Amino acid sequence: MAKISRDTPLAELTLRRYEKPTMTERELVRKLCLSLGLLQPGDSRDVVVDVLHVLLQAKRRREELHSEEIKNEVMKERKRLGLPMLGIAASNIRRQLKRIKDLQLIETNANLYRIMEFGELSEVFEEKVENFLLKSVMGRVKEYLKKIDEEFMPQMSRSKMLALESFSPELLEMAKAHRRN
Image (cartoon, rainbow, N blue to C red):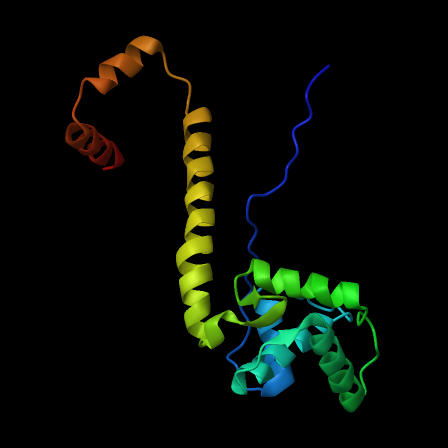
């Protein structure tokens, strides 16, 4: 019996480009969540926006919050804005916190959550996502592209391959350039 391979990613990153940010507060956080793939376009269950918004407000006060405090703040915020109370179960709040934590934007210390080291979100993104996660994902994608290029190389006889390997790369480039002209 053949072994079934599981296609479980080691890391996953969704990035979207939107118009320049001109909005404020919650709508700005919503666009960030959309841009980072934390929220899907057209998704009505947007509690992740409120979770991140509450954490950003706590950052202003340099406060760390327990998930239950985050849940209570999210409920107050949604009530104040007249938003439906969807996705506010404690288990869902913890799931959203995990998603944000997986992006390395927040951290926990003794079950208390905060923006990474109370730092600037742009710096945290650059350090953790752009320089670490994105580079590793891009490196692996490039490995797949290179392997595909090798696998789907035009068929060539073994003797031709050996003959070409004896030429220097510079000479091969000159031959290619001459053939194009």
